Image 1 (spheres, rainbow, N blue to C red):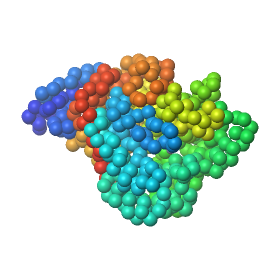
Image 2 (cartoon, rainbow, N blue to C red; image 1 turned 90 degrees about the vertical axis):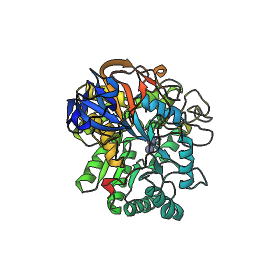
Image 3 (cartoon, protein in one colour; image 1 turned 135 degrees about the vertical axis):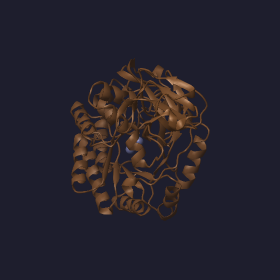
Length: 472
Ligand code: DUC
Ligand code: ZN
Ligand code: ZN
């Protein structure tokens, strides 16, 4: 902590009166910002702009480590968000950085895909953006040229899928990809569900005429995820690399992660709001309505929600992300694509959630007394920055980017579609009440959301990342 004597020039901006969540403590102090960076934490600071944050909590701006934006999603299907709408929604939900995935289309190299995504994001973003890659081919160009080049450019993490025809890699291919991660010091993320088991169950369900949305959840049961989680952690063990298991939905998968850790495997784990608040019953609503909740892995039941909470409170999870993957419901290019009403197999997988991630965890976690403010900051920002190599983000500390979100911990709001800013035409949390709401989002010193609405020009840019420490 400093006093103003150490920074005698007026700051560009000073935030006064807030309780500030730093990496070690929660303290009342002022935050002095110059040229987009935090330069002073102290008292008696002066600034050209003074933000009175009395009664509010200042937290590191949210880093959503898992979002999908403008991602190719199959024939005739379009994602509901482009970079403008996704980052507007993210900023309104208290985020300052989002991490979308780059997926190459058929015939495109990964480097061409990245160039496309960069062009789509350019000049559109209200938050900063930092890309992960998706690896769907273990060919010599991808492994020998594209991955090393893109890692060197700061895209230091990539996801592989064990499910989805056309995207899944075999175990042999995953090992080859992990070997590149080991050589280059990058981090592998795994979507762990056993495709063959899903296909077996899906075919059986269809033959029996069980084709409504809830059958999506019934044909991707817990063992499908548990087995793949075991296999993914074992492959990481064989390859000698760390691995991040994304969107963990249940206690059995978490047990596999814990067992691997006990063996000395460096396993990181992510979970998401849908696994603490939604259940498979949501997919069982009348008619086609359940399609709104179709995502993979699917939401489970209240016992699994409790298991995920145990993981969140015990430190078993490293990060809490949204897996924002938005489609419109009432749209033949969205959930209602031709064939979707005939079989759940054809319903695009994914739900919108970048704007609701933080309020849901704040309310269900901090307000309800399950987790501390520091744990909240760690799960939603600090750990993401550390794990993924965002060197200047994720903490309120001198020298860091002034990425800050001000929370009103006593503000109660009911989540409804009409208060959100995403491109989707629904929210899976319609009617969900939360206490604790982000009221101002500040990106590198500039306010980008105030009182629930986006503010200012899109100044977000792509952030190249360092190599993850865990992969060193
Ligand atoms: N996996 C994701 O990570 N997001 C959306 C769909 C999916 O299967
Ligand atoms: Zn996934
Ligand atoms: Zn995802």
